[in-house]
Length: 202
Image (cartoon, rainbow, N blue to C red; front, top):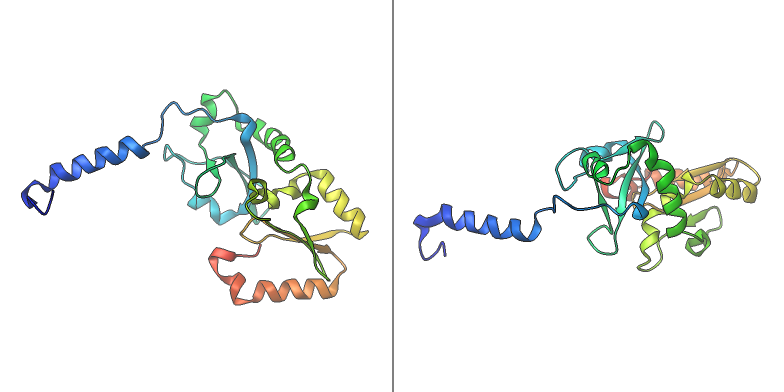
């Protein structure tokens, strides 16, 4: 249309924007499914990159000095397979942020009932990694929020554990006194691959 009549750029652009909005504009009445709210562990800097449908701040809690727990709605489709939501959307379904932690852990246990299917045991450490197209595997880093999970790992190793979290939301777990394993993880953390922002090792 613009090629045929360049003088009509503004109405052509307005029409295009209107069509895009009719397809992609967020539904102001969208209802979050509370049974699908799950926690996601991310580096603190990640909080500045989260985008919600209503362009307001996403919900998250601090986990430690390096990590935050951001809350998402698990979805079967979409680029990431989950959806960030805002405090405004949460109020729409009658929930407060203070109740999200316990709710999200209950939902996580439903989505990841058997973490053992994600185990890849290496010589020096255990790797919980994504398997195929399984939807739950994108929340593997969140397993460390489950008290029973950490108890089992400490019992297996008979010592405190050290955990590395690749940006892909997976887990590397090894014993605190495993010098060879820690040296290998340090090598990984210092390698070019893990220094790239897209594959940061926390």
